[in-house]
Image (tube, rainbow, N blue to C red):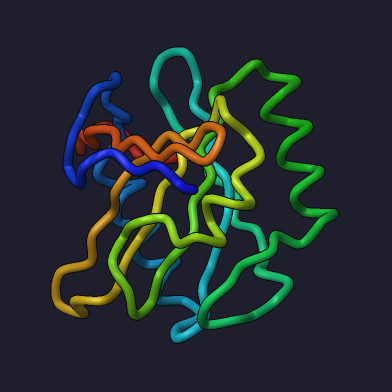
Length: 150
């Protein structure tokens, strides 16, 4: 059985996004609407974020599968640089909460999982989660007006 902590409960360190990256992820979510999009973020020690847009090999409205070659290239760079890892995807018609499939396929316990929702077309939202051994814990998300993403 999948355990879930109460929605909006924060028991971990916040995940920090700069405003430009927040905007970029929302723009990316719209880029292939109504299909889900996905990608990775490499989080440098100083908090700067490196974005890796990765094609959704499934091009589905309800599921994502990162294109393997693009995923491998991005993961190698993130690991080689020693950056933190965030994995993001969009939900075009549902809330920003991990689906049963998202939870089942969460293979990186050290990663922060970000979900961008376009459910409310006028107010896109991003939420952050830890997913470890089927347990979902929402993380607070802080948006800061830092420099442009690289």
